[in-house]
Image 1 (spheres, helix red, strand yellow):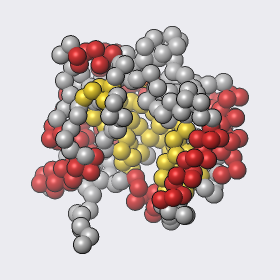
Image 2 (cartoon, rainbow, N blue to C red):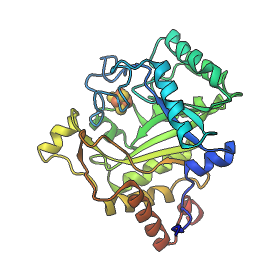
Image 3 (cartoon, rainbow, N blue to C red):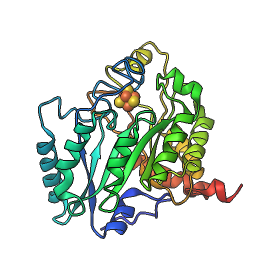
Image 4 (tube, helix red, strand yellow):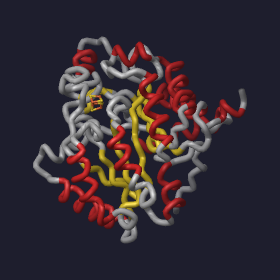
Length: 312
Ligand code: SF4
């Protein structure tokens, strides 16, 4: 017997994509071998304290899998889920506009034959302080053929927290880059992490408020995760860093969603990491379990995404 689930109290990405493109759409992650100014010394060394050496990505290129093979394997994989499945090509690792123009051109040339057919959206993750005009020029040219999403990390609305975790950009830089993305007619996706040290539950609300103010079309949010080979791994081992428990995270996440705009599309509500890399939190609850807890919590509160803006 099929389980009937209550409607989600937030605007989830997958149904939104299916409604927009009229077919299933899945993500194909691509690692183009970019770097990060927060690792190579341009802004700093060592990266954000939660980021592992793969720059939050797959590490496929470093493992010897070139982009063409990554793309073909990804397209074949999603086609196995549904013969008509289309793709969001996702440039995920490191800062994908922190490359030479020729490198981005090469990647876009590779995607070119599939744009508007098998690839219906291109998603480019980068930092707010590494988004040059030449990159926006190139991405803007694709706008009429595919959705172009620029994913910018805010992570926290507090400059003090951003300094303390070595993000090495400010909330003002985030706001300025968001305005440039919106001015080009590109779609803006903002990232947030709940549970960063010093941010607190109020920090989650303030971060949602900034993502709403800048007009982010999409939002990705996840719990602070402590990964091997990060600065936070050392802090956690020394007892200097706490992580959220599932019920706590869900309560903060509900606050966060309530303070967004109801139209913003929620791309993600939890983070993933390979089990061998994840030190904490190791929740006894699956991703679906967190989603179900969230649904129950917001149902109990009588709220949904955007509720705070409609009741203030
Ligand atoms: S900006 Fe991104 S890739 Fe660079 S260190 Fe921070 S999280 Fe990692």
